[in-house]
Image (cartoon, rainbow, N blue to C red; front, side, top):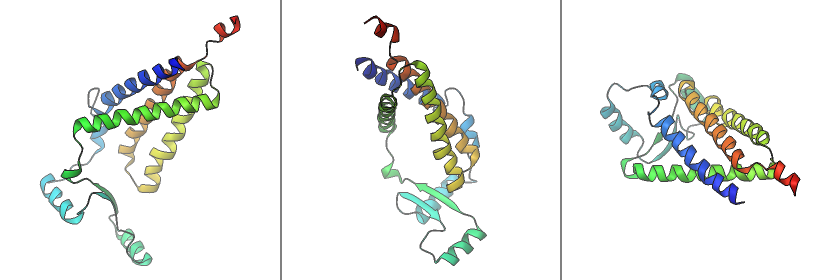
Length: 188
């Protein structure tokens, strides 16, 4: 149990560093090249404040329309899902980092529980489960965003790369700590 707790802590720290390197433009800025740029960000921000008055997620055209009217609006386009966070609701960078660290801690802890429930013993068990979990998560969540919410594949692919590699790193590293020492067990 002690090795598992140490493994969870070390893996959480490594995953946090990986996220910083991947998203913090330390290694590259390629993911952000998939974002589009408005002609005037200041004007766009003013329009967003007026059009989307509350922090939240908006889908345009919204569901308040009659079904046939909404379908007609969708056919005419454009269609958008907009996530708005007004300035008074935006966490500080330190708060975001703490929340990200805690999210990683929960993720790694859940992976450790899953590995235990699955009966993983050898490093190979952990590696196989890591690949399976990463593939399932990326297909369901990341590619689901493309299929169900119309997110641009050029952006989602970077989320998928991060999610897949992060889960592989976490699962494999946890495996180093959690694997059963079969040779020591056979001597007892």
